[in-house]
Image 1 (cartoon, rainbow, N blue to C red):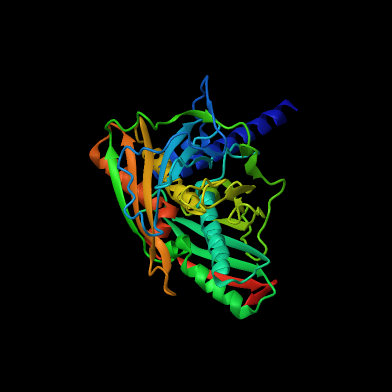
Image 2 (cartoon, one colour; image 1 turned 90 degrees about the vertical axis):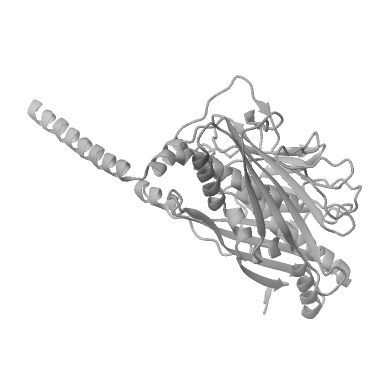
Length: 448
């Protein structure tokens, strides 16, 4: 009996040794960048005695003051708009990907804008501290089209009983940990779903006008000018800097208005076809991570608020599979105060926060030594051929600044900066012409 036990014990030792050797061979066969990334994702952040508590979405207390540029409103006469975003990391041991994004539309009297929490690092079985950057980005795209449909129906004097917009973005990394790794927005699929008793021809006229004015969609459809800048060191982290922070709940209020919540069960789109997530083993996941493909959807619907006709409820998915409900609103005039961030503020936030995520991951892959970093953006939204049938809304320029405090070499910091830009799905979706697949439904039936 004793010999049998010894044999079993020796066999287990041999098996475990073989597994250990195989694991070691696989581990050390990986590029250093990939090993660094895995260690980063598996490790926890530091814990702190005190945390600033934030809501997922809340108003800024003060107007934004970027350190890297002077916010500017070039044209105050036309309907052009200019939006500034600033991001900063939020230190929390439960998520190393937690960050705060602040946004403000310029040129509005006594308007300070909004701040949001974005997260991609939730613990197993827990909600993240907020939607992901690309969830906000996709929310902005869907809500922006929804608003243009409402405005187009008003312009054409066409009554539509109900409007819903579904947007599905397909994102992809290609050889993420390699020196030429890149992130892509491969395709944006949009469903415009309308209920109405008017003719199909009138509905199509409304849709056509709305698509011309769909700022976010036109920015994706066409190549957009991005002017990136790297700012190294200097006195740039006095006002905005990484600090310990948390959120007590996924529910946010502004006064008594509900801004954010997580749905009790995942809400799915009506007509979008979603890919089923694959169940993979550990080693397959390591390769998948380097060439990750994933989808984010957003569903924009009317909030049915008679006093705020452009207030929309947006259901958004996240990489952690739960769905959030957030709200978007629009300015009715220059003195108006919306109840929630505007669609283009969400779009601007998503773009800046996505780049912030990539700076986090790139610094981890490089094992970069730094004190702090953040992103500051201004997006100039423009209208062409105003008051004509050829009017088109689009993005004129994205001014993007990556700020870093570090004693690393100029060469290493330039590599960090360029690789972060290359990996940013949102930025690449703007820089390159994105494939746009748009479908229309009237009273539940497709319009061809």
